[in-house]
Structures are given as C-alpha cells and as structure tokens.
Image (tube, rainbow, N blue to C red; front, side, top):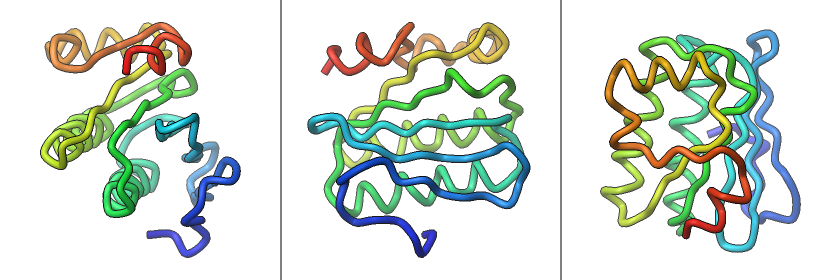
Length: 132
C-alpha cells in the first residue's frame, strides 16, 4: 500500500506512479468509493496500485465501488485481469463494483471477452452512483 494513502476520505487521494501518465485517484462520494484510473491499464504500476488499493479499502470497510475508466485509452490482458480480479475480490467480500465511462476501445475489449455480461457498465458517474 502506498505510504501516502489517507485513511479518511476528506478529499481525493492521488496515488503517484512512476510510469508516465498513469495515476489512480481514490475519492468518496457519499458511501461509494470512486477509483479514477488515468493512463493505459497494462503491465505497469497502475494495475498493481489498483489491486493494492482495492484490498486496502475493503480492509477499511468499503463495500460500494465505482471504477472510472473514462481516461483509460487501452487495457491489455493484465489490465483486464486486474479489473476482473478486483470485481471478484469485492464480490467475495460482500461488496459491489460498477464501472463507467469506458472508451470504445476498452468496451470492445470487454465485449470480446464477454465481460460486459458480468460487469455493470454505465455511461457516466451519475448513472453508476445512482445504481446502488
């Protein structure tokens, strides 16, 4: 877990990554934890930071998650695997995970793998948040 992760949700928490253009921001909207991903979601620190943050947040009692994919232009097998792993991990812990804003390339990848039938995909944050 990154050492600068705040245990309270007073505002967005940025998880800085060494990879260029990749970042993970964690924020709270009412009782929902929103994870904003930025950059290609592939075999870099973003997938590892994502997994670590999900585990840490579940450990702190978070149960409702929304993942913002709007700034993820590409997801390779590692990135898709991280999304699926987080989804299953959250479900196993009694939580719910929803996704929004996936660009066409990411939606295509998810549809190719039939994950659009497993994941709840929404157009925007408002729709994802109101689905709880």
